[in-house]
Length: 504
Image 1 (cartoon, rainbow, N blue to C red):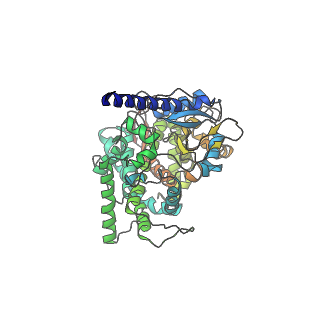
Image 2 (image 1 turned 120 degrees about the horizontal axis):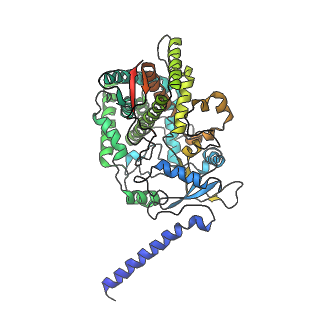
Image 3 (image 1 turned 90 degrees about the vertical axis):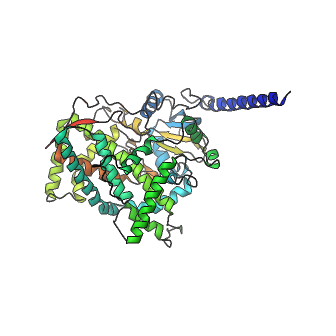
């Protein structure tokens, strides 16, 4: 046998063995007698996303197809077997009761080679616990009060910009305007810079914020590798963030640190709190851990504040206005409540004023139910987990766990008429009767969204100021029924949300 023939035979043998192992892996659920859908060899059960169907369609169709077959069904996260949770009680155990066995999200992170992946959302195990402890004090209601005037200042500029715009054209694409509002809020609170993308939509910070979601370093094969073999990819120093994204945000952070420290500037914002953590080398936690952070860790947390803050809040406000434009009665009820709350506080929009806007909160909560921006919660099982009360259902060690929050939110057994927008679903008496696990836009348990207070504050201020000053109606350009973006992992309208706007 020649060397060429030998190498060819060896290559074919390796290919055949690899195919055998992959086929064996895709038989995982079948041999255990657990219901599952036949996977695609590259994308698993995510076949069709980014092309023929949205991520939401994947989660909803899987839930509807397998609900009632057991506490979970089989799923393939690319090539990795995953448990797709069908029972909210099991979801509650994973998120709260047995949290210590499901601490990690199981997402790829590699802070040593790719510093922006050292963000709280992606970190695992001990690293996550330490960083969560460091950041928790920065998100108290007291710290929100410090940042509240900044959010209001940007909100007032938002009203001025919309007022000017509708003089020329009363139909505006609100998703873009809302994203510019939240970008300006995050830019000043998390990065300490005044961007004013409301007046200048082509501002570099705004454009780079958009590119975070569109510029991907890896294609389908790369994503499949990272998600299927994360440890191997870390050893190979594989990065996930495009270099131009990393370079831009690291530069912004370093320049801002230098400027503030040189000029002794304090703004009582999120960036100040991160700077305090960076500079206080003597600060220790109760268990003796160093509470300081590096410049790279600071940049990663500011970055996740941007990624998690501007897109989710602006999308939520956009969907809220979309629903309110279709129901004038609900819209007017919110407007009257906002005006009454402001009148009670002598016309001044204060932090305490928001507490009186109960129905506005219900509108936001119902929007998050019907349009859950992060449709699933991901966890990873640390040790083999036999599901209590369900013999034969075992979540394996290292297995991905998928909790379909959006599917729970649209389950008729939990919410009557689940596809109808009804803020009364969140009246105080109905909330008291319902288990908290039935509403999961911010997650639940120790790993819930640390920025929940800030996100809610931002949405309340934006919506309250808009509804106080403008009336929103549907028009010929309004997307009815709503169609969803097939590329974005987060829930997003496919072609924006255009509404007719007039001054009140």
